[in-house]
Amino acid sequence: LRVLQAGVCNTDVELSRGYKGFEGTMGHEFVGIVDKICPSATGPPHVKEGDRVVSEINLVKDGSGCRCYHERAQHPERAALGIVNADGCFAEYVISPIINLHLVPPSLSDDQAMFAEPLAAACQ
Image 1 (tube, rainbow, N blue to C red):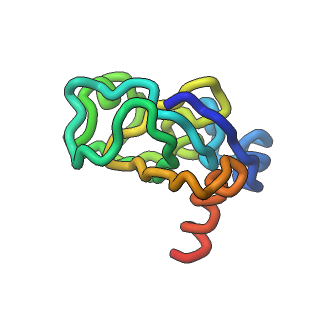
Image 2 (image 1 turned 90 degrees about the vertical axis):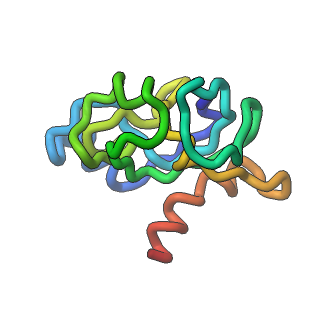
């Protein structure tokens, strides 16, 4: 995913101060464009290259999703983008399994779409 915009939350601030010893690329609140879909990606074909999306941050290494993602990911059975054992969105590109992606309606701006993750966390 090519990152269009990313937000900073208190978790990012705490991670930058050494919380949990995270040493990867931080960031988990973002909106991006699907730049490339791995040929081995599995899951519902609900997104295509060029779509604007947000991503769920919780990752489960269960054999689903993109083989390329799991081969490159340096994380145990569970991870969270930019928080626990998986690089996040404070970069030009971020990798997320296709099953974690959600289309952003054209009626939402990037500013609004970026708040999908904190809104989801608040509603959980």
